[in-house]
Image 1 (cartoon, one colour):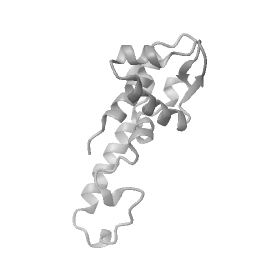
Image 2: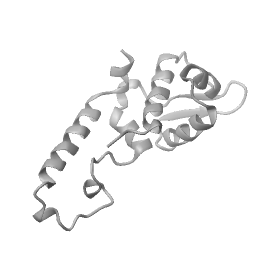
Image 3: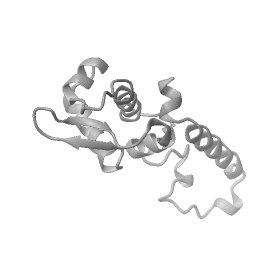
Image 4: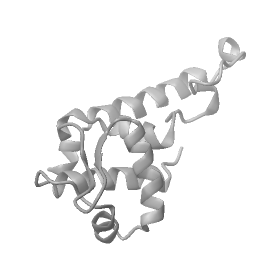
Amino acid sequence: MKISTKGRYALRIMIDLGLNYNGNFISLKDIALRQEVSMKYLEQIIAMLNKAGYLETARGNNGGYKLAKKPAEYKVGDILRATEGDLAPIYCLSDEEDCTRKENCKTHSFWKGLDDAINNYVDSVTLEDLLK
């Protein structure tokens, strides 16, 4: 399993919003400049984070984005899942798949253990932890 740039940049966006929060909305242009990522690509990622309910948005001259909750209320795993989907290391463990060989598979418990380790780790770290 590899985390794509969408997942990595989503974390960077959320960290940027946390570090630069002063009560006002932060423009996408400012985030793009600080993170050295194109606005077009950030717009795609922001849309995913917004759809997940992680951001507040405002339009207009003073518009932009800010966190919808306190940084301690965001798990890294949830942010990654909002942009990456399921974090399962193999397809047969994903939410969409019902593996018919699970009962006879000699490696299923190994992959399930890896999946549990990944999810336990990413869910144990909050955005606040990354901001420190």
